Length: 333
Image (cartoon, rainbow, N blue to C red; front, top):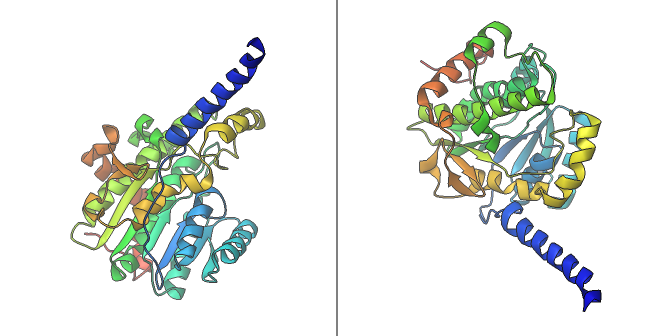
């Protein structure tokens, strides 16, 4: 009997792991059967991870998919993979560096000149780690929020013209731990003076709160149109998000991530749900997780905070200058 004990222990551990994985970490699946023939989608940061899995699913649904990415070599390889796997040749790369507001404006101008439609905009790209953007902002704030803020506004008129259309902002559960220091934004462009892992994590949390608040205020401003928007937590996913973290942190995290985190396909399911699911239009501005409506933290429900963030983001991104130079961009009153 004692000889069986090690085997029983191993079996119990495996059973526990599978139970936890399938019912806690694996998450739910988007079951929408919607086809997208004749429609166009942009997915930022789609050369790898969740973004690539999202783009692949949209391509399988026959959409024209724009891979909006910074790294040309990786994005063109991803486009090739997606075209081959989906059988859809309407998958193309367009250069977009969200760490440069100039690049965001250039992307929007090129897109509006060359693409007649935009039905789905998925703001998926995200970074975690030290550094600053070309415009002097903390990398997490500049890429995760401000670049997407400007991009969305520059493309908003095209989304309205092609409505019903959707905007999906990939946020995170970490939005609950975020804060917005407007005085720091005004004086130092949200620079993270201490580049320690702890402060980089806080900067990431702050940027994810910005995603949620941006979505909330955007929904208020789109009220009465046929454009809806959603933010979401994709789950705990094993991606390249932490590629800028120190090597020893990555090595420590990798085995744990492989064992317990969702893969990229699993992490894309709530994004796809928000982009495709029929009947959720009345929840525009709200936050989803595991393909279901979820509540955010108190700060994420603060309309005054969302409005103030919008106004500050307009100034920091020079949105009105971009609007004046782009006749198709929205003109807010």
